[in-house]
Amino acid sequence: MALDPKKNAERWLSHATAQRELLDGKIKNDIEKHRKGWCKIRFVDKAGNPIVGKKVSVRQTSHEFKYGANIFMLDEFTDEKLNRAYRDNFANYFNLATVPFYWDGLEPEEGKPRFAKNSPKVYRRPAPELCVEYCEEKGIAAKLHCLVYDKFIPEWLKRDDMDYMEKAYEERIRQIAERYNGRLYEIEVINELLCEPGWGYKSVISSKRDIIEWSFALARKYMPNEKLVINECNGLIDCARSGYRYPYFMMTDLALKNGVCIDKVGVQHHCFSGATTSTDEAYENEINSADNAVMFAPSNLLKALDTLAELGKPLELTEITVPAFGETEEGEWLQAELLDVLYTTAFSHKAMENVVYWNVPDGYAYQPEGRNWNENKCRGGLFRKDMTPKASAERLFEMFNKRWHTELSLETDGNGYVEFRGFYGGYTAELCDETSEFDIVKGESNSIIVEM
Image 1 (cartoon, rainbow, N blue to C red):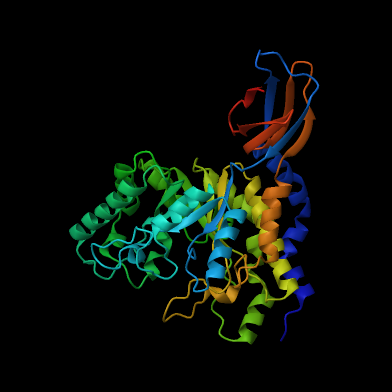
Image 2 (cartoon, rainbow, N blue to C red):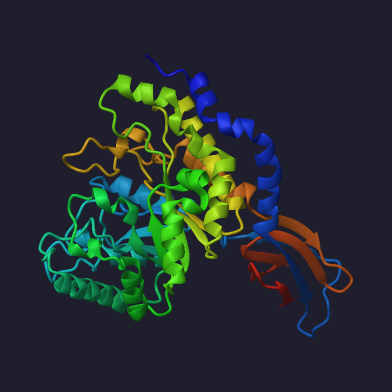
C-alpha cells in the first residue's frame, strides 16, 4: 500500500472543503471583527499645531495575540549549528514559548533544583533560567508548564504520604514563585487531570477530591498577581459532540462555581496520527483511513470553542500537533493546509487569546520508554530535523506576518488626523523622517496624539 497524495489530501481536507463557505464567510468576518480595532492618531508639531497633508507610513511590529511553541530543545542539540538555527528560528517564528517546569526534570535530585542556566543537562528539559533569559532577550512571552502535573514527579518523593506531598508541592511552588513572579506571561497550574486514571506513576495528590481547588489556592497564595491557567488533554472534538456534558467543561464549571481563581481555560489539540504504528503498512493504513480528519472540521472547532467560552474565561490552545504525511513535498503541503484551517478558525474566535504549537523540529519529540508510542512518527514538527522550515512553518509565518498584518500608507487630514483599522499589537508610524511607536489595544479607545 502506498500513500496517494491526491486522495490523502481529499480525505484530510474533506471537512474544510465542504465548509469553505464557513471559512470564507463567518470565520473571515470574525477575524476582522475580533482581531482588529480602530485607531485614530493626531500628528502635531512641537507648538501643538496639526501637521496637515503629510504622508504617514504605518507598520505593525508585533501581535497582541500570542502564537508560540514549546522551547524544549533550546541548546539541546549536540551540533552547535542546530542550536544557533533553533535560537534564530524560534525568535523569528513565535512570540510565546512554553517553558518546561516538570518536577522530575527540574529537581531530579532532592534539594538541588535545576533553575540556573548552567545546570546539568536533562534531555528536552532546558533549565528554566536559560529559557526565560532567552525569552526576555528576544521579546518573547514565556509561560510556565506546569506546577501540578503528578505524572512527572521525582522518584525521591514519598509518594504515598499525603501530608508530606502537600508540603513538598507547596515548597516547590514557593521556590518557583520566588524566582519567577512578574517574569512570566502565564502559569499553567494543573495539567491533564482527565488522563490521571491511566498514569502508572503518580502520588497520593492525584487522589485528592479537591485537587483543582487545592492546586489553584496554593498557586494563588504564592503568585497573587499571575495569570493562572487550567489545561487538559485533547478534547475539542469530544466537546463538540458532548457540549455541556463534556467532562472537562463540567469539571471546570464546578471548580469555578466553587470559587477557584482560574484565569484562563486551556485545551490541547494534538493529532498524533501514526504515533502507535510499528510498520510502514500500519502507518499507511492509519493515514489513509483519515479518521482524525474530523479534528480539522471548522464547524466542530467553533462549536467546541463556543461551549468552552460559556465558562466565561479566555481560551487557549495550549498544545497543537498537526501531522505531516511522509517527507514528500505533498505531505508537507498537506500539513500546512491543515494547520491553516486550525489556526484560522481559532484566530477567529472572540475568546481565544493564544495558540501554542508543540514540537518545533521533527525527530526530537516525546518517546516514553516501554510504550508503543512515538510522537516522531507523526512528523508533527514545523521544521525538519536539520531545522530548515517546512511548508507549515512558512505558512505560520505568512499568517501572522502578512495575512494578519497591518501596513498602510496614509495622509493626515486638515486637522492632522489619520484613522485606520488594524490588527491589535505594536506599531510604528513614520512621518517626515521621524518615527513614533504606539499600540492598538483590544478594548481601548486607541485615540493617540503624536508630537513630531
